[in-house]
Image (tube, one colour):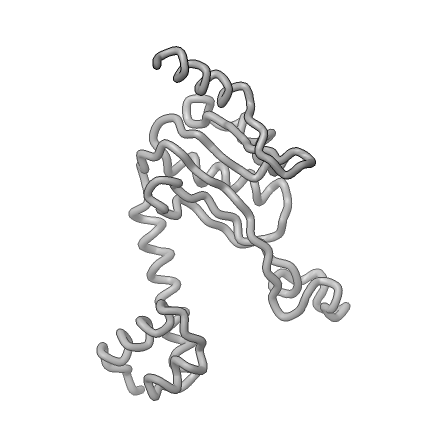
Length: 185
């Protein structure tokens, strides 16, 4: 079996990281599409293994959690009946927990948009952190309710909510913090 030289591998990965499409990467590097896809899958597995082993005991102050929708194969309403109950066809959500200061992806998961997936993200994130953090979300109900069942010493939860006018409203913690800062001045 032929093995792609390291210089070609670097060229392929560099092109993909820069945001080039698969077809343009193949064209620029003269590498077959299947080879690029296999290299991309191998790289993904290596990155996931590295993340699992090394992103531990993170000292973060602020964690931002969110979920991102995408579809695979087709949008949910267009998925054929024989594939509707199969994961990987239709709506898929990427769940993320990012350190707001360093932009380190503390935890991520891919799955359906269910309370269990949300809770699994919170458990995985909590297992990777040291100390208390401020957890910021877009106000997803599941995160606010289920994160309180995790270790109280790990989580300090504050969610931003949008009122009907589209402006951010502060919770009691934010008001106390700003009024305390004014008194010190």
